[in-house]
Length: 199
Image (cartoon, rainbow, N blue to C red; front, side, top):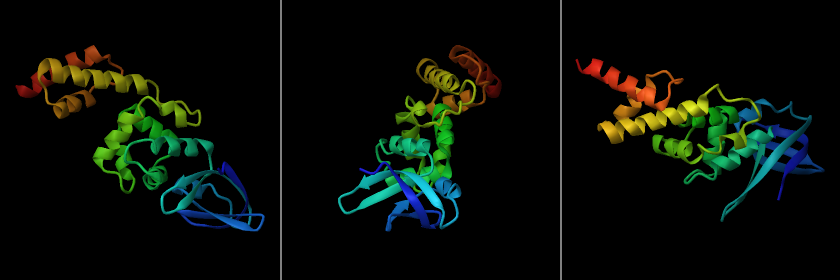
């Protein structure tokens, strides 16, 4: 319904911005990242917007950059992640940091946001792992981030299914290894390291 707002910035704080468009003040929920990019009150501002429709309210969200809006929309597709939680995540992390955390499997980054526990953080990383390119602003992810994440995941699975490790133990072993290794090399190195630890 609303794609963007362009007008005079009447008020803002870390969570709210009011944009005056032709005498009508539109109250938008914003993230801390967007708040940092707003001009002084009284100057012209442009925000990309998303109208969140609930049974009891209509709530407008505003974003300084299109990549942040796209990231917000992707986050809200995750089961259990509503607009409030998505906004909290984007107050703690930039879209590129969200993408990097997902690509590298670093789900703990999401627990920096208010209202996000370990289980929800893991669900976000899992459900969005194939969609990270949809909400970056074109900044490349760290070299090898996606392949390293896939290799580590494959290695951990092999350790649990073929060698009887507990999932947590397998992940801990793999996390200590060089991310440039292939899945097979990671398994070999993990087994070697485990053997040393057992002595």
